[in-house]
Length: 135
Image 1 (tube, one colour):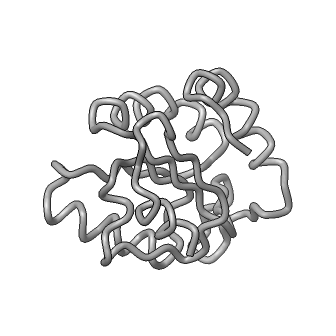
Image 2 (tube, one colour):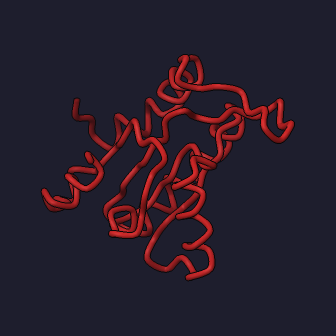
Image 3 (spheres, one colour):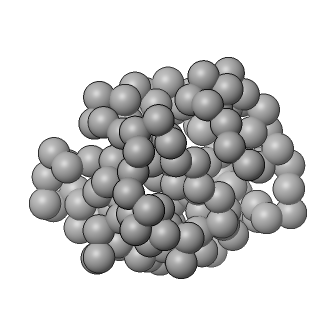
């Protein structure tokens, strides 16, 4: 399915509610964080620019927190230390939603179980960049 950025922004709460209600989500239990949820799947939202990625990240934080979902922002200007931590969280499944730019499709970015991807097609990401997220 393809949706415009406006459709995604207007329906983000509904998307998150549907994700939170599915059996794909499970309560965290390993560290006693009973009030938080953890995705068996991870969600990636790839924006065309760092500014737009930051806006998406900022505008979604209240919703994500409301649903007990963890999130990170991964963009080109993210510090090396933060990138290392974010990439480790993605690889181990300790983050539910990641919002970013082309930084999401770098060779050293691995997901534990990527199950839902939103790509801003208006930017004309290259076919190869989109294919990286499909694998």
